[in-house]
Length: 496
Ligand code: SF4
Image 1 (cartoon, rainbow, N blue to C red):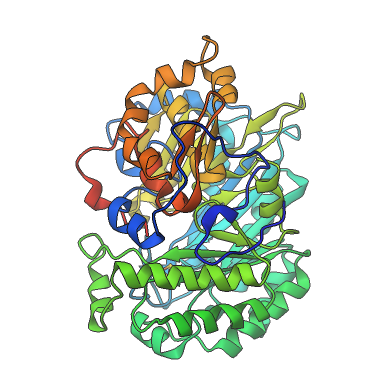
Image 2 (cartoon, rainbow, N blue to C red):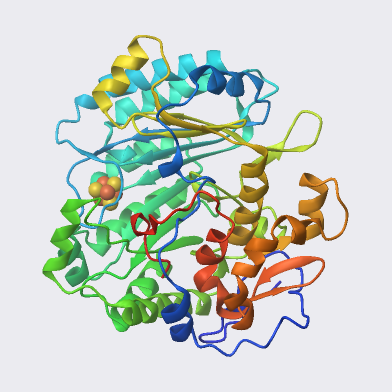
């Protein structure tokens, strides 16, 4: 499907080639983006899991989580969390440990590999269940010294077989790499590099505490892209930052596009100083208000689509050749703790599509294995102590019920495809025939009445679809299906 760009027209969102339903409850959208944001955009989770991590429990049944790991038979994935950063960016919302001494990294890698040994005893590991994705995130994985990074990669490869097409991805802070470091990365066999760019304007960079010359970003990007397979470079950008203007964000996007990434993530800055007190530093320069944030988002979107990038899900843009764009076109875009992925599912040994069981190692890492979500403690010392003692470092967990899976499938479909196929949902979750979806979610559909009336949602017997500019508030639509969401919405970020 070709996406033709029409300014301020989100109906061009790229996705599975299925027409949006039309029916008596489907008036033509007439609300402008600004009106939609004013009326509907509140706070809502990003839904990289359902339920979301704040609802995992400390008083979980450890044996039940172990049983879930033992029963899991999906293809394997691995997430590795490296929490260290050399300094803290003012906007950062991640679990981060500021450390200048890279010597810490050696012991950290030792513990990671010990934890991987332990994980391999909890779930079945065999050549029939090779890794389909390995993702190093943080923090800053490239904070690790090249020798430690090499040892980590070799240690993973020697412990778990990987599929020949396995994606090896790493988050890269261009400031933490010199040319020699970039060369090391190239030799380690990564197939995807994700560069934290955020903004290339010096005034914005000063306001967010992340000075990062564009020339340095470009040099590292070009070195890494030359070693990765085609379509192996993506950039993260951010809107809603102090000193950002429509002109400056357009210039950032144009500069970034010229550096050759095939994929962008454009995230809205989440200002949550009550959770991350260091973000008070962002208030030294005025932050854009909601209307200005929308203009910034729109300008970035317009530039990217004007350069041929297709919008995916809520906040991603990719060239048509990029694996994420292909996955979206084929209706197999997935979402998990790594965000959007084309590796959320893989073929099992019998050829059936199975959800990837995502193991996770490192302080604060979160796993999704079988029916279990399990989050490691964020306390690095405690994490190391637990691993040394031979025990899982889980601090919080959740075992998904059948109801969680039913609702999670709806939420994932809304955020990935902007559409729920009611027949597919019924075939998977209900033993009743046509209409089962409408019966199961009658209350939720009623609560979404204002979205239908505004033309942001449509439905017929076959599907429920977000239409027009409704993608702007897709998280708010998804939240209607969240039975865990209580009055604590303030803990989540604004949807635009
Ligand atoms: S480099 Fe990334 S993880 Fe580290 S402080 Fe900056 S934003 Fe946070």
